[in-house]
Length: 187
Image (cartoon, rainbow, N blue to C red; front, side, top):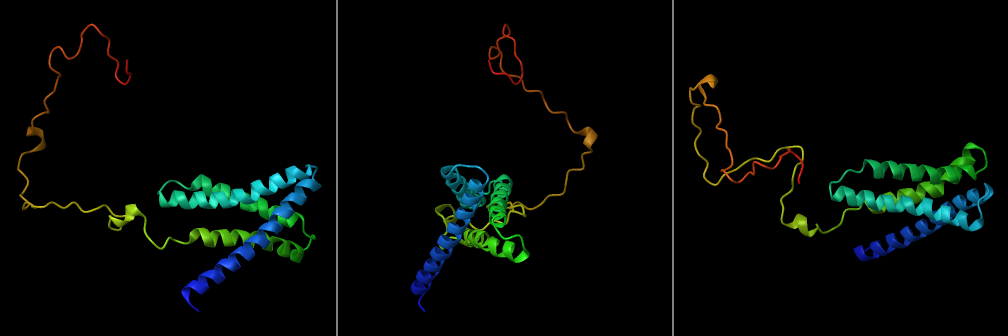
């Protein structure tokens, strides 16, 4: 099978699973909302909000990781919306282990599909990454100079004999003496 054919098959499978799992998840959230007193249109609004929020949060999580920004809040919200979707699936099920398991399958499949799709790394690096060597964030970069100087032994001057730093004042006339000055406040 060629790579192009494999990509097409994967896309068809992705769309089939996504459509079916998404439809089941949307329907369960809608039905649960309507069963508990919400009008029909609000049931669909709840379904759209719960299910699409999980997808959006997955995209936001990926974008924040690429930008090396904090992901804690977004990841927490993603887990919360995933659990809300899963709870709606299970609440609509027959009250048995198999009923709950079978009802959870669409939501879990949908979330797994989103996770797999969003975790794929792009084939080409971004424009910023093309010019820069890989960075290991756990290690400090080595400082290099064009003409390294040979190391000299330290001067045998004791710390007590070192001169105190000189106080540097601005030239006269730069600071107006008739104006009050408070550090940290711009007037």
